[in-house]
Length: 101
Length: 508
Image (cartoon, rainbow over all chains, first blue to last red; front, side, top):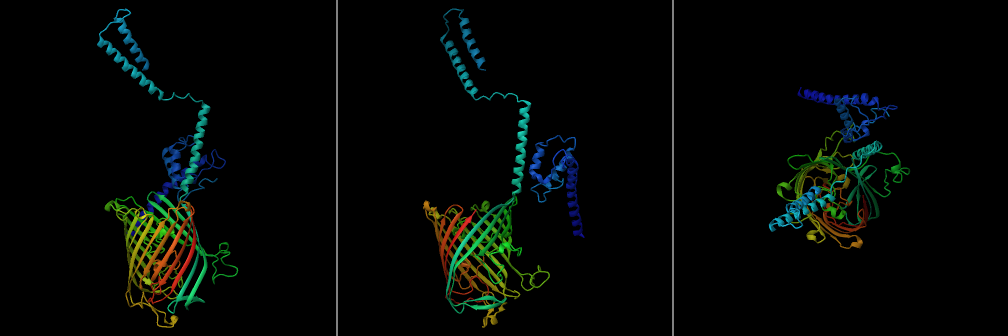
């Protein structure tokens, strides 16, 4: 019985962790993808375009070409950054096609 | 400030003049005059000092830039950041550093004085068959190529990876499994198996614990250990002294750094676990990964204590102990291997590079083995045509003890036009029941397993930091048969082996 409980807890933890990144991914596609898309206002962008630390520095230095504070809240941006880092170029699962190029 | 000081000085003079009532000559007490002059001197020095300081004063603020210039600078910085993003991402993706080694070697072997006890087992039509050897046998002009692809990566500050894949082949290697249409001349251009020889693949984990501990897990560095780096002309390649253990091995090694506790430089204590032989059911079962019920595994448990020799820089001493359980009976044909017993190995190794700044590198090793036969043996009487029972270094009923010594020297010749070539000599002697785990010896005849005497003289000629040549001569006088095998009773032999070799190494 104990091992079942342990398995359930491990599964729940794994699922909740995935949910964070799933939210970040959905936010990324929705918020970022509104402009960054093929034929859009900005070229498509994907997590695998940069390494994780490079993504972090990009936002720390406030280098986005346009002001996005009106499009995405600080908490949402935090989730998106976590998603970008999780699937960055140097991760074990680089995401190259979250937004088709 | 300067202005104020000058003004103050002028006022001081003027005040003196005014006090004199406007007359041309001022009269004042000598001590007052002296005080004024001292004050003037002090002010002058202060002015000089300020003028000197002014020379290194900050440059004036730049003129304000125009909007166009600001936008251009801003754009340039963005471009630099974008370029840095690409470069940094590329760098972080380059996780593995690659290196390579290419060795081409030619050997000229000659076995002589072979007698009735010198036999070998060959496969004829897939069946093991006794093949007597007698007289002399030559193998001149034996060329080989060895290619090693080395890998390493610092995965994170506490975790690193090291790997090596190897291709080692005879020139034009073609045996009975080849055909006229498929052989060494097109082997890399025709589809075959997915096999790649994995020499090493292990991770070092150095956790940030209170005690200095490291774990090495995988197919770990267990070949070409000390002192073989002298002959191989490179850095130390293995944890274990070569006389005791020079074989590819999968295992786990825990290393505890002792330097901070003992004060002895490079001191450490290692515990190792690995498997020597593991037989599974891949010949006879759908579940090929299941253990072979009869064979069991040869597990290895070992411990090593090493340090720099106190007072002797660039030196090493290693105390070793290893136990191998359930050594297998045979790998011949379809015999199902059984355990023939256990074996202990222990020894001491010492070496010193550039001994007392003499340009001599010296080493000495001693090792011993002790078997614990379990009574099992395989009956090869039919094959040999006489009663032949192969147990652990006996017919299976006796425990055996053997030992070996290995010593040598290498001298670096101080001759710059030839890039400081090196000349070395090695000697080893093994007793009747000497048994080492040195199957991966760089010499194909497993020199350090010799039950007899072995001598080797070599000369290393560096050409540059990536290329060197080695020429050598090896002479072995066997006293007993079966060197390098733990099976069967060694018997006397007069066999001798000579080998002249030349090799070229390129490493980059």
